[in-house]
Image 1 (tube, rainbow, N blue to C red):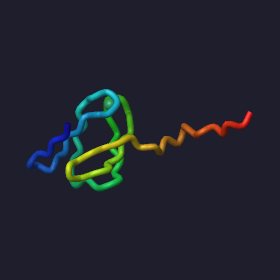
Image 2 (cartoon, rainbow, N blue to C red; image 1 turned 135 degrees about the vertical axis):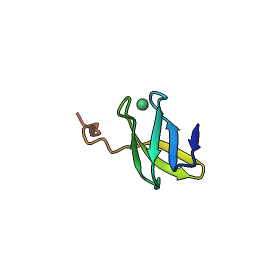
Image 3 (cartoon, helix red, strand yellow; image 1 turned 30 degrees about the vertical axis):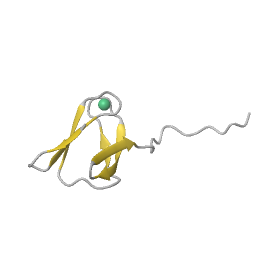
Length: 68
Ligand SMILES: [Zn+2]
């Protein structure tokens, strides 16, 4: 559920905790939105309708090669 106000703010629900994230100003494709509540990073994947998805750029998490 997203909504855009006339003041240029985009409100989106966090995918992780469901908290409302307010994005101010112009939102661009690929923009990373961080939830202030849980710190989850999400990326803008669509603008019309506004849609976010998980951002996979966590520097701390690296895929372990399955090679024992
Ligand atoms: Zn959250």
